[in-house]
Amino acid sequence: MVRVGMLTSGGDCQSLNATMRGIGKGLFNYYGDDVEIIGFIDGYKGLMYNEYRKLKPKDFSGILDEGGTILGTSRQPFKMMRVVEDGFDKVAAMKQTYKAHKLDCLCVLGGNGSQKTSALLKEEGLNVLGLPKTIDNDLWGTDVTFGFQSAINIATEAIDCIHTTAASHGRVFIIEVMGHKVGDLTLHAGIAGGADIILIPEIPYDINCVAKAIQKREDEGKNFTIIAMAEGALSTDDAQLKKKQLAKKRAELPASYDLAAQIQEKTGHEVRVTVPGHTQRGGRPCPYDRVLSTRLGAAAAQMITKKKYGYLVGMHNNEITPIPLEDIAGKLKMVDPKSEIIKQIKSIGISFGDE
Ligand code: F6P
Image 1: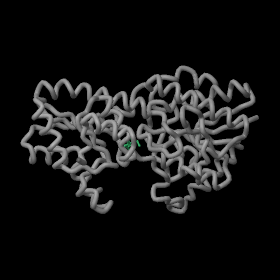
Image 2 (image 1 turned 90 degrees about the vertical axis):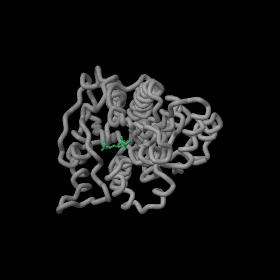
Image 3 (image 1 turned 120 degrees about the vertical axis):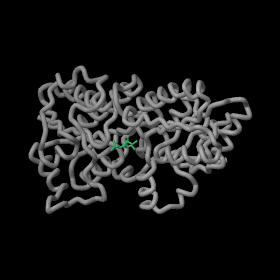
Image 4 (image 1 turned 45 degrees about the vertical axis):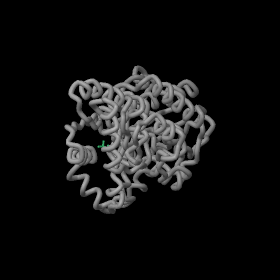
């Protein structure tokens, strides 16, 4: 009997169920009755406290297009790497559960923090496979993560809707897109939604450049401006602040409202802010993500049949590319300000607030 555990960790996204379905169907198809799949409830918490349910073939049916996660999720447990808390050793507890179920492998569907933990579990001797989840697409070692494309679709739809009302009223609109540290989602939704200004954390903005871009549109006879702004985008001044100072400032005034006030003061324009927020992580996965998730899940199942453990199941140039978990742990994949995509978008006159 082969025994496989799975859990979904961190912020949810649209294609978690589709990925688990790929793994589950792949395993049942290969092993038939000779495989047992244990689904841990609410992420690593379930592994720590041994809360689980056995997943049968029927559990993987009808969930390809279902958003959320049938297992529930929680933020990964090692914020600041506090491995022992109030005398409770989290790693020891997870290892104990893993051993109690006699698992051959644990599949972790998660983003950066979660895969850091899976690398830690690997170091502790467990067989782990990571599946790249996040709407932020900021996971090192894979071109693309599942959830990213679905979130782009939703953020783009939000920008499309704002376009018409912004044009009717002749207003400046800021659409705040998710992404605290990395702006890839904002970049793609901004391009797809035809934003005039795109602001991302990797390219700190100068308020004078933002004002100049708005003025340029006015000079061209355009009475409205659409700004796609990542929730973690910041000005060149704020980029000088210490992490704690910036966090305090943001707790008082989110980045988009801060920018709105600055634009209003500098240009006298009426500015509105729209925050699609968690809608970007909700609802059904788009077809692209369903395909990606199915492929990643199937590949993970195949790796289990070959006892190939300890990798993130990544995707490079549209081919499955396993990467050792220790090579990706703790690394963020950010937008390169000098990348081709940024140059191309700048070349059509879209401002990133830096020139
Ligand atoms: O990591 C995914 C993400 O959606 C980020 O884009 C966003 O900043 C964050 O999670 C929001 O987290 P929470 O759901 O805990 O508010």
